[in-house]
Length: 237
Ligand SMILES: Nc1ncnc2c1ncn2[C@@H]1O[C@H](COP(=O)(O)OP(=O)(O)OP(=O)(O)O)[C@@H](O)[C@H]1O
Image (cartoon, rainbow, N blue to C red):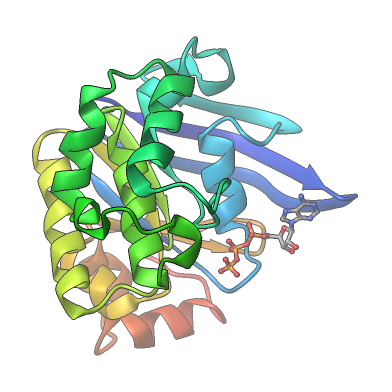
């Protein structure tokens, strides 16, 4: 349904180079997890994919079109980039209706994603009073609103309870089974190992490796050991 391509991406922020020469592709039907230390640049890469960061060099395309030239990026890409509500006094339904209206998305989608994410059960509660896991589900609901061919999630697992983690795994693998390209940043390697088609390591300001979990793990006993080793020595498939 969609393909995300990042080529030669360079991002400078606050006078520092955050990313350079970063290459990554996420094919239709692929679930790719971004790994890397705190501050490595995962969120910056995701924000670049969503056209929210202006690169100093390189290109980010969705099905060949530069994301910053997409007429309606909020309808072409599902985005969950953070969990801080803009209007903490809103209910989930009002929050999602507000996003749908801003993006030109059919209001009927709001009830569909409320139902699909379980957020509808939170009723009239103000989102400013939500728990961490409830805010995550609301962010995930917002990403599902446009029914897009490509979706991006920044640390969506944080704060989810065990049922929520299983639910999200099934949701993400279901989205890719429908042919969508899905890119997720996470530190939860046990979960990544269960469901990723590929992992991409952000290190030293670039994509240091982009491999299947089996290739990345190599001769190491598990993904975590391989990840820690990869931070000190280059990974080769
Ligand atoms: N607007 C900005 N201005 C200046 N520096 C920024 C800005 N946004 C991010 N940075 C810096 O870019 C670097 C990468 O940050 P980023 O949030 O992309 O890392 P991350 O890999 O997502 O980290 P984490 O795992 O902690 O979420 C950090 O050093 C951060 O301070």
